[in-house]
Image (cartoon, rainbow, N blue to C red; front, side, top):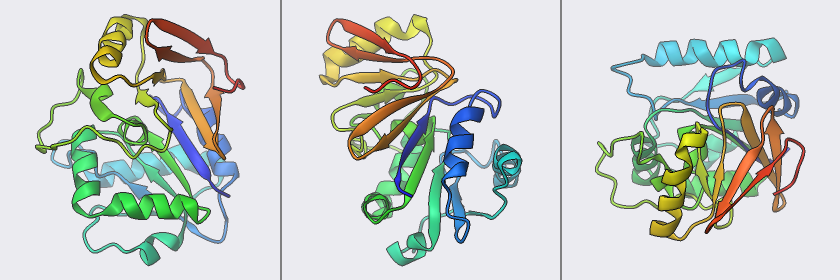
Length: 223
């Protein structure tokens, strides 16, 4: 198993088909690692986050889930003990700051290169792209992050989550400012990326924006 799964956010009913596909490919001999660190634990406790991830994957028989609340001191060997990593939603700047501060981005990239899979939901999906400025309309940079560069796991594409049609002008402004093409994902839309192929998952199309063009790609289609 290896690959990258992304979802536009939403509740477990909206992401059900994406979650089902991800769960179906998990290595039963290894645990799933859950990272809720984008979430402000003062607002929503990590205990609540863990209950949420259990509720998401229990219907698919995935019950061996380990949660890390902190990345400090975590090594590549620690990470390689897992079948896959689920990076949850919250504040994108907070998430990227923690990853960079702990040099965890290099470990995530090695993990996927070595055959592991990563699932990013909402903020976890945005950081997989080339530029996390796609979250500026909804997230405050309270962490004081100095860069908007993402993990660049999607070639030059940036990822826009929680997409609605009224976001179109904001997306075009982003493209003019940062010169990055955008894949916009609604809360019912996801992507599966493997060996350079980007496949649309879920119940609604992904929208590809580039310069003045926008093109919907239906589920099952390839970007």
